[in-house]
Amino acid sequence: MHSCMPVAVVTGANRGLGLETAKALAQRGYRVWLTGRDASSIARATASLQAQGLDVQSALLDVADPTTIREFSERMAAEPEISALVNNAGASLQGFDAKLAATTLDNNYRGAVRVTDALWSRLAPDARIVMVSSGMGELSSFSPELRLRLLATTLNRAQIEEIAEEFVSAVARGSHARAGFPSNAYSVSKALLNAFTRVLAQQLASSARRVNAVCPGWVKTRMGGDSAPRTVEQGASGIVWAATLRESSAENGGFFRDAKAIAW
Image 1 (cartoon, rainbow, N blue to C red):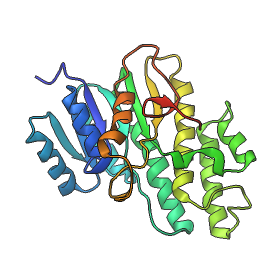
Image 2 (cartoon, one colour; image 1 turned 90 degrees about the horizontal axis):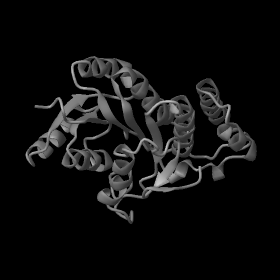
Image 3 (cartoon, one colour; image 1 turned 135 degrees about the vertical axis):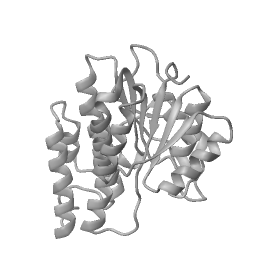
């Protein structure tokens, strides 16, 4: 019954944007895997969508825990290929120190790298990969030198990782501002995620696969707070758009809000 349905995987799908994205994809005929780091929470979210007649499944996947990522990828080996991978899981922590900076980067940037790499062999030939980013990752808050490094067409994964390590070390020394970084680990994590999107897009250029970063805007979620101007439906719509692009000439390596290109 399921073999002809496209498969989607959404990380951090137990609430907010992830849950709304999973619901919207399921409503479009995808068989959706909701994943999250809290087994009971993700199971409840999945049951709520199943009660609406949607074809969804739940699985434990903590983007900061390689063991759960490996176990999920092994589980997906028995499933049809993945047509849409939405790297939505992320953290916005209070405070600012080296430990918090390291944790934020590990979740928001490296988490997406780990999941994408682990599921790479399970992605369909024309899979769509979506990095849920943020306008806070725009490079206007970085020094001109760092902007040049992050936007370089020759940028590679090792260089992104170098910048990540430089940031955490500079925060530990209290010199991150002098080094050209903003005093916001969330902003840096999303800028690095965007850089990874651009590097991956170059790798995919000769294939039918596509990867794009999406800013959902400031959305009313537990992370966004009650004063946010956008609903989860509005925020998820751009994510769903990027996950369901079907044209062979579809956008690749871009940064979008509401399906419109925005500046890095």
